[in-house]
Image: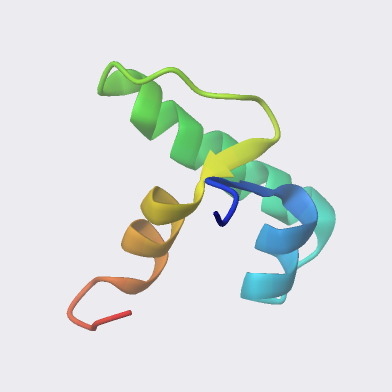
Length: 61
């Protein structure tokens, strides 16, 4: 089974950004999830939520 969470290096690679910027993105996405009542893990983001938020505005995966 594919890992449910993405770590910072994977986020940085997917978006072609620096690791510090990837941490900022992860923090923002986790804040959104926490505001909806979900538990989060620092330095990791739910893979499905990441792809939904980054790529789903008007386009398919």
